[in-house]
Length: 205
Image 1 (cartoon, rainbow, N blue to C red):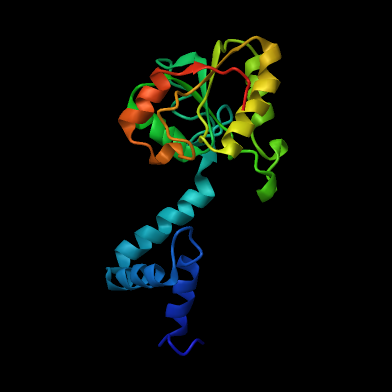
Image 2: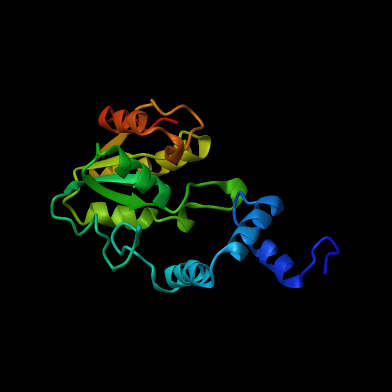
């Protein structure tokens, strides 16, 4: 046991929390001590929610968004415009776009962007399933809403090369989002305008 910890149990709990992204050991200690002060029922509810999420959460078979059922609430909603698909990196981006209330189409969650330095290639992402969705027909426009980074632009270009022969309209969100920004950190008004004011994608990096 590390001598600075009075308890092995405390040290183990802090070590587990510190594995979470953006959580250092000091923050982990604060969280653990906070849980220790709570009633047993509250802590068990917290732990139970995480375990249930891991065991029971599904990913939509259509768009790969997180879901309680095989098809997510967005894809199964007849009020949504199924002819438009917005391509995003991750589930957080779906939530960010939904918060703008400016988009009524469907989504396609890639699960990341092409990043050779991180060992992420096209085959590691949900790009082929996007191509298959377009080939199946009924989709008139694909909106590329990836982060305005080199990796995001590279992924845009790769998707463009795959979809351009299929004759679907390809758009990119307007550059109201600053270069280098990620969608989830954009304010709702800026992101909403970027979607509404989207422009045709020309296939250039």
